[in-house]
Image 1 (spheres, one colour):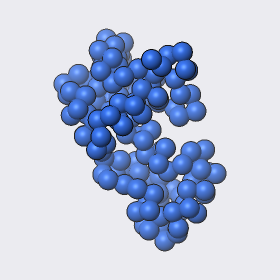
Image 2 (cartoon, helix red, strand yellow):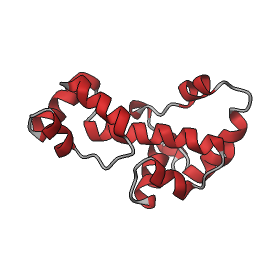
Image 3 (spheres, helix red, strand yellow):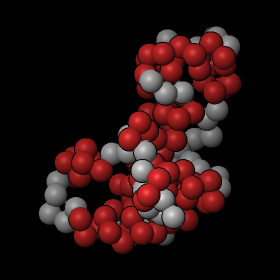
Image 4 (cartoon, helix red, strand yellow):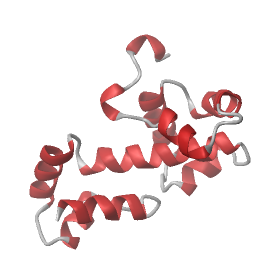
Length: 132
């Protein structure tokens, strides 16, 4: 059941998903799904969804051919402010700064390696000193 939810999040990250919809899809309550998902994967379904969205946003920003607003909506976020705040929390810099720096940092690096090196990890959020 949890694997199906995780796979759905990975596949449909850009769609409007919420914990209730995910829970309905596997016939359990939202609370039960959240508890079991967190116990199995170390983070809530919502946090996992946001991590996937930020990971995809990082890849799109590294390409450099889309604006931050376009990336925000392409990954399924409906609010630029919330997207920017969450991006900054996970990555340690605003999306616009990341776009400028990451394009140069991953030049010549195969995309599969760049994805692994730059992957946001919730338990390794940016230290408070890096936030401004």
